Image (cartoon, rainbow, N blue to C red):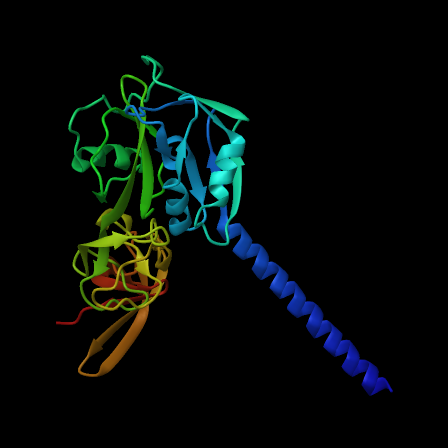
Length: 328
């Protein structure tokens, strides 16, 4: 009877854990598929004598997959009177979209107004309105939004609209794509989806580096490499960030140097007692010594024998307590 109850209890517990796992997985999937659509109360847009426009022209669409955002952005909307659009109409249009398995949140007033007035608002001052702007011209603005000093390549399927960029207000380094929104001097708003490829000079091992070795300009090199969100901030981008540090792992030739795999060397102060060793023809001798210079592992310093103040030698620090004299 006890075995029967124990078996039943174990089975019930397994069902409970599986149920929890399914619930958590569903929650994670749901969160990943959430899409947020935001439409302001008043929209400035050039209808070009046509009452039709797309949802991407008037809304900020975030979250979800790229495919679902694209499907929603391309939804065609229109107005009956040329200047108003209702929430109910937008909801009906969204329900006909091809956004698959997505939970959509719509933030907009019951009714919005589309206008084409002369505009003299407080626009973003980072760029002046420009005619015939190219994608290359957008690079400084993208780098400024991302606080990025590396390289970024920008590509798009359409021309760059005139006007100042008003959205987004920031970009995360490594983001593969973003929708830029422009407002021209007449207040008209246009959107431009762009693809972004990020590059940075990465510090790499120029030869095999063993754990505990000191990093120097002699065993390091730099090379341009593509950067993603997950790798941004992970690698050293210049020698100054790692030269003089100690390798906490073994790096193969050509392997990038990660900032979390190096450590600042401990400085050994002069006057410290150490063991001096010397090797010659397979034999090794050792004696007690005193450091005469400050230094870290890998540095060459002066050291003297503890029993002879006049015997000053040049030695390499091997560890916190060991130095080696080079015997010619």
